[in-house]
Image (cartoon, rainbow, N blue to C red; front, side):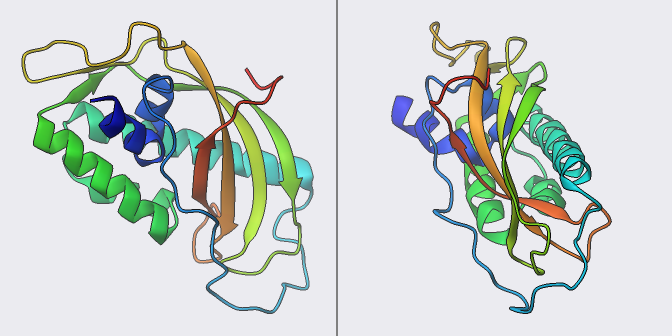
Length: 191
């Protein structure tokens, strides 16, 4: 059971955070630069602060939709598509399918409890990584239960877990960002 939960870290970031001790990252290695190779002349965001705020909003929306999908036992996994890059979407959907196959669902909601900017490239082009941040996710109110209503979460799971999250530019979206990778972060000072 631990190895299956470990694969779910990137797949269900909200529950991943909830099960951080149990799950240990399965994400695409690096975001791919798949679109235009010409950098934009103008920065995508007015400044670093605006870029970080946009990333926070996208990540919070991502947490909310993954919480909803998992609470519904993996139903309608395509709801994650607007928030993640295509490679990560495939991984996410496989994780949702695993939840569905096992009859698991979650209760409660995860909460973004802080971010710290790692890097920002203001002139990134469509499809390229523009920003990375460290995120602290509070999952103290999240549980995952099996078909019999028994928790499958480790009793020693921390209430808060840190992740390194990367975002790529998608100029076709109003928010202009998609999550391209997320991995557990063991460094200090995030949570």
